[in-house]
Image (spheres, rainbow, N blue to C red):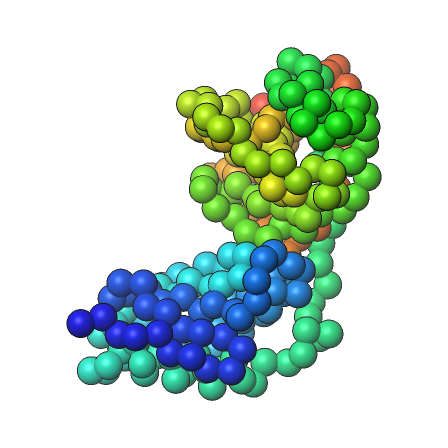
Length: 246
């Protein structure tokens, strides 16, 4: 019989199989404050050095904890929950959080790369130029990495860019493609399927399994997009090939 969720204070522990539990913070939607809570919890758990913890994965409003049940007695889920609850109870306030990095990402919004620019501009009732301005005029937060290695989910974008995903996902999206959906923006690090509106492409490598840190971006980072020309895109792309890495 699966263990039942454990409710404690402002978070809830939920079992996900017999080797993972999820800490869910009791807040709806996506917000910077909840993201900070998740990152702070993940860091506190990592610093604690608890036995049998194999991975810690922060997301929008939860943190996944992968663990070896054999390290936590006859009732591993409940024993680990008690340890985590005690640990989270002692966390400092968010005002003491470490400063966040701000990283500039160059993006070419040429129609060759931004294959959904016209469609998206129509849906958002603005011009293509206005759409690009909306995308580059604000700093966005990396809430999580997911779907593909090193793929950042970032937001929250201007409410004018609150549009759903494509009804039918594409089977192939070029690596470096920058896309929008649901007031969020993502970058596809590798060639992959995808259902978001493609508005441009970056020449920057986001994930390199040969060089640590493997991902250019991490949850909690801030990102600013900078519009570049097609010629600049080509030059930067060539430099990335000559000097592999981030």
